[in-house]
Each structure stands twice: as structure tokens, then as C-alpha cells.
Amino acid sequence: MPLTTPRVRAALVAAASAGLIAAALPAPEPLGIGDPLFPHLGNPGYDVLTYDISLTYSGDNRAPLDALTKIQARATHRLERINLDFAHGTVQAVEVDGRPAEFALAGEDLVVAPARPVEAGRALTIAVTHTSDPSAEKAVGGWVRTADGLAMANQADAAHRVFPCNDHPADKALFTFRVTAPKDLTAVANGQWIGRAHAGASTTWVYRGLHPMATELAQVSIGRSAVIRRTGPRGLPLRDVVPAADRKRMEPWLRKTPGHVQWMEQKVGRYPFDTYGVLIADAATGFELETQTLSLFERPLFTHPKLPEWYVESVMVHELAHHWFGNSVTPRTWSDLWLNEGHATWYEALYAEETARRPLEHRMRDAYTASDRWRAAGGPPAAPRPPAAGQKISLFRPVVYDGSALVLYALRQEIGKGLFEALQRRWVTEHAHGTAGTSDFVRLASEVAGRDLTGFLHAWLYDRKTPPMPGHPDWRSKAPGQEQAPAAKPAKGTA
Ligand SMILES: [Zn+2]
Image 1: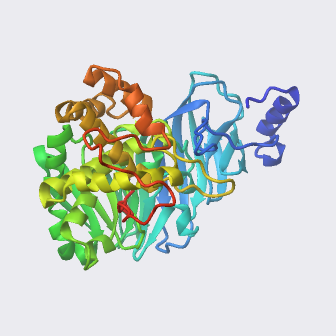
Image 2: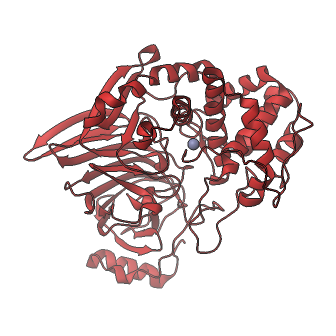
Image 3: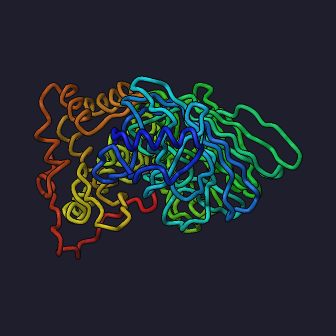
């Protein structure tokens, strides 16, 4: 990138006049924006402003959906090619600014050669006609097949296995979803319900988010669902989506959300989006996910006879807390994931302390004991270990959950509760609906505390060994090989 040789230009000009000849493209290659953990995720040279994604569902959740993804973007560099992230579907056609464009797949990139190069600073539209295949292996992410349809779980790197996109949280955009499904099914997506139109045996549902969203947080649910509306604090519209047959059974859980929102607002300030809700998917995913404005939960979380109520509620609060930490304030790179999970785990644990007498200090002491081992296994909180060659990464290790909440606990011990709470509020206010990274957090913490915390936080965030805990000189962390101590239980299955 970019292509400059006369041979390539000639080929592109010829292709533009001759129509689609994918073979004329010189070897396309997958690109990325330099995230060390996901080298091919995201793409350079443009900023996506909006996605408008149309999906047509047949009623069979193993069959590919027909899809049209329209992207409005602004070129930040001159583009002779445009790379999008995309896999697990067939691409039928691509248009750039209304003109047919050549395309080829390279790795998990869809490489598009517009008929004419796009100049830096220019707006462009890309329209991709494609399929979206939900029958790929579950472990890969993207579509989740439920008992009655589909849901979505794209974190961290799977949105592009559903729709073509610039699949990195550093490039947030506004989303519209138009979902066509058999008329006996209900489709719900992130954001506000815009409208619904019936045509023959199908219904098309339209949803639009009012705030920027990372691709990893997209949600589309299709199934035999009940949509339950109620009002939260300050009149906040709440919308839950549950299997229709479970409506009564789930109500005792669903009615807890207004209290959860109120609790979080008391801690960090106003909820940053225009709606919230719980999506209960009839599937055993093994995780929950903070999909924007409509958090995804697996049904077994609410039906398992052995899970205590305080635990289930704290998981609900975890996903809600992500709407401040992760969804509104989005990590700049995936190494900043600790900012998402550390904070969500923090409020999960704090809620359990305040409402169910589960002392935060006990949980943090257990985390401290395990911390050296977690760091050895997964890397320190802000420098997660990259994947081994050829292996799919699992970033969601204990070190980014309780291991990172432990960093926040150390910070609170160091600067005191008042300054710590002021920092939390300023973080979600000053970076609302933006992108921020570890260095931003360290800078703001120092500013709020009125002293340079770089050395203190860097040791906690980047060192192989867990630093001494302020106020608890007796706490010890077990080195690898000394695991006989009871391990602190990570919030299993909480994304
Ligand atoms: Zn989480």
C-alpha cells in the first residue's frame, strides 16, 4: 500500500472499464493498524463514520444470511486500495461511491480496489453485497446460534466474521441495522427502535444507535422473543429481550436493572447511552457480553439452581458497568483491555460488597495471592501476552479481570477513596464516547492526585512481579510453582 507502479495503474484502469476482474488485482495483502495483539485487525487510511447493515434471515440459523453493508467513511490518506476486515461470508459485489469496484479476499481482509483512487480527506461510501455465515465454529465468535435464532458476540475480533468493517475499537462509528426475518420472529439490535415494516411473510426491523460504537459491541438478536419495556432512573428507557416462553420466569431478574443503573449512576455519574437492557439468549455461551445498550447474557446464568442471587446480580452489574468503561470510553488498543475489565470487575465486586456483604478486601487479598501466577501466565495487566504463532488469542484471562481490579484497589489504597472516586468520574466524563488508553489513565490519575503516579502505576501495570500492596504489607503473592494456595476465583464467563 499504496500502489504506485504504472503496471498496477494500467491494470486498475483496464479493470474499471472492463468490469469486475478480481484476477487483475496485484496480490492483495491483509493489513492492520498496528495493534500488537491483533496485527491484522483494523485497517489504515480511513475513518468509518457510519455503518448501515441490512441482514435477511431465512429462519434457519445454520444458513448464511443475505446481507448488504454500506459504509460511509473519510479517507485519511490517498487510497488506491481499501482494506476491510471480513471473513465467513461470500462477497458478491462491492461498490465504491456507486461504482463497481474490484475486490479480493486476503486472509481475513476484503481488499477493494476502487475504480479511481480516493484522495485524502474525501468522503467515500462502500457498499458490500455479501452473505454472513452463522455456521462457523462457536469458538471463533461472531454469530451465536440460539435455540430459537441468533445473537451476536463479537468481542474481541469477530465482528468481521459477521459483516465487513474496520474491526478495531479505535474506529468507532454510528450503526443502523435493518433486519428482515420471518414475521413470527422478533429482531432487536443496538440502539433505538426506528420502525418495522411487514411485506408478505417477512418483517423488517430497523434500529439505530445515537452514539458511536465499536464493532465488537454490535448486537443483533433474532428469535421468538418478548421485548419488555420499563423505565429506569431519570426516565431512562429500558428494554429487555428474553425468550418469549421465559417472560414471567425472568421478570424477577429484569426488574433489578433500574436499581443497578441507579447504583452505578451514584458511583460514576449519568448512564452514557439513551437506552439499556438485558438480552437473554437461549444458548450456553459460557460468557456474558456488554453489547452496547443491550447486554448479552446466557440463559443458564438465570436458571442455574446453584448460582446465588448476589453472584448473578454482580454479573449483571459487571456488564452494565462496561457501558461507562469499555463502551463509552473505548480502549485505544487491545492491550488497554484492563481498563475495561478491571473497572467492570471493580464495580461487580463493589456491588457485592455493598449489597451482599462480600468484602472487596477479601476478594482483593485472594487476587493478590494469585497475581504473580496470573502475570506469569497471561502477562502483566497492561501488556497482555501475545498469542503463540498460529493460535487464536484468548485475551480474557484472570489477569485482566481480578488481576486488573487489583491495580485499581492498589491505586485507591495509595491515593485514598475520595480522590479515587473523583478519578473514576473524571475518566468517564472526559473521555465519554471517545477512545482512551493506559497512558491517558496514568496521566489523569496523576492530575487528580496532584502528584506523579507514573512510577507507581507502571509497576502495577507492567511489572512481572506484583508490587507491594499499600496498606497491606503482609499480603504475599505466590510465585508460579507454588499454586497450592487456593486460587482467587476469576469471574468466570464474564466478558
Ligand atoms: Zn467484562
